[in-house]
Image (cartoon, rainbow, N blue to C red; front, top):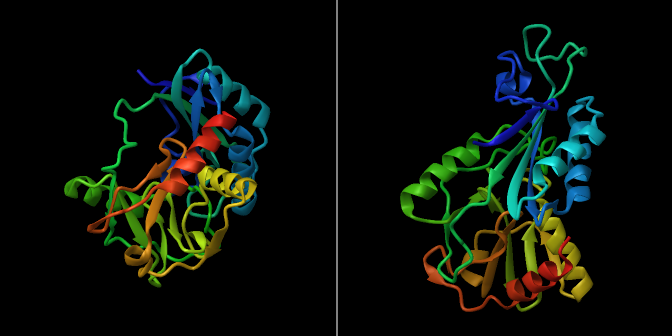
Length: 271
């Protein structure tokens, strides 16, 4: 059974009036844990703090949250720990918070997926589901994920491991569960996330690692034409790490040189 702590107590229940359930009023983090330790926890907390500030969600129990994450990760060879922070149970009806809500924190441990996705046959296509444009929420890992739910349903039906998603304005943004990088003659390019999308922790790790290795990464608006022009592509999230794409929207990718270099560098750091 999944190990779950809600506000520090072992339970699988939250209030039916919780605003995370009612309105998606909250944020989440998925943390990779190895050899009993959460990886990149400062980056997860940095993103969480930024999101809480932008949502004006008054959560301050970071010491307790960190202790719970560490406790669930302890003595686990490898696992995922998911953190959810909501505004808490509603104290009145309606979208607008009253201001006296008490935030809810949910920390759960999940087994590491048994399948190994890191193969040359990792297949990525293009989703028909578009991401809505909202700069006020861009970058945040908020609880409103229906676009990704729809994209993942179609992904499963087509036998793909991941699908890339465009914004409503036609810019390529990310995968349904990942960020994406492409290689060309100038180095690497990854989409900017000013209008929508999630600024992933592994994306941040890759940007830092690339800078340390002298690899040029351009963070710019990306057009759909990149799918036919790129000689290499890889996706990133904390579960897959740096995942080479072997097949992209109908064609085999000829290289994964950058992905291999970055993967070795990140694994050697063992953060």
